Structures are given as C-alpha cells and as structure tokens.
Length: 157
Image 1 (cartoon, rainbow, N blue to C red):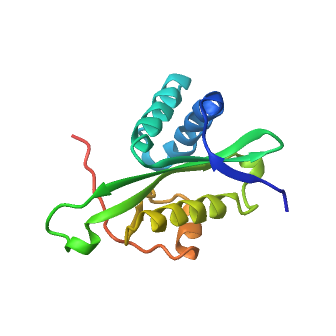
Image 2 (cartoon, one colour; image 1 turned 135 degrees about the vertical axis):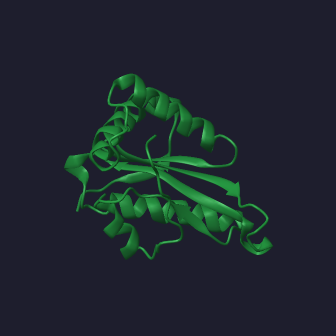
Image 3 (cartoon, helix red, strand yellow; image 1 turned 60 degrees about the horizontal axis):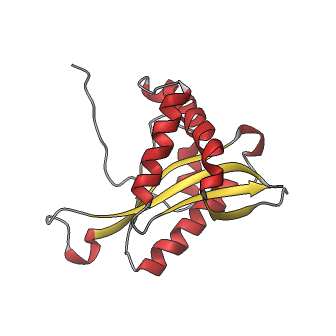
C-alpha cells in the first residue's frame, strides 16, 4: 500500500489542481458529454472549487512523495425550507479525483473520510454528493454508505 498524506490544498498546489480538474473533466465527459476538455476549463473549474470552499469549506489534496495525486472539495450549504430544520444545514462533497496510477489504493476513501470528519466537526447532520450515471466511482460511494437521495433529470433543448 502506497503511503500518502491528506491535507488542505495550498496556493502552491494550484498547477496540480488545474491539471487534475482538467483530467476530471476528461474522465467525466463520456458520462455527461458536456465537459470542457481544455486546460482553461480545468483552470476555471479549479478556481470555482477554491471559491466554493473559501467560506469554511475545504479543498483537500492527497500527496505522495511531495506530489499532489488527488483532490476533493467540501463545502457547506443550506436546504430550502421544505426540509426539516435539523437537516437543512448540510455538507457537500464535490470533484473527487485520483490520478489514474494511484487509483485503488484507498486515497479516495481517505479523502471522503477526512471530509466527513470535517463535516461532523462543523455539526451538520447530512452530507451529499453528486455522481454521474455510469461513473464507476459510484460503487465506492455506495460501499462508503452513500445512498440515492435525489435524481436530477436533464433535457437538451
């Protein structure tokens, strides 16, 4: 088993985050057929993650021998009033990505576990994430105890 460290992202990680965000777009495109595949799309995606996590969230990275090999974002939000008050505040996991040579080594599970720890520390009662149909990562999320909560439908016009 490869040894890795989970830590908050820093500004020095930005080039790796840009590359990984682009790689995530490329990975997800066969499932959604709508992803930007250029580096600029990855850079803008990484910038959005930094913005979403800036207000009390976390952009986590996994590092092996000084190199960033994975990332995941955690941010907090509030459900509309139709949800019971005790469940309205929630955490959201987004953009989990592990570079291909490092998949299957527990890095994704460790990132999710750290995000869950941070969410519990914040006192939220629920954590959500989205996954595209056909993404093999869904099996990991289900093994970690995640279940279907809502289904979003889309129609191109």
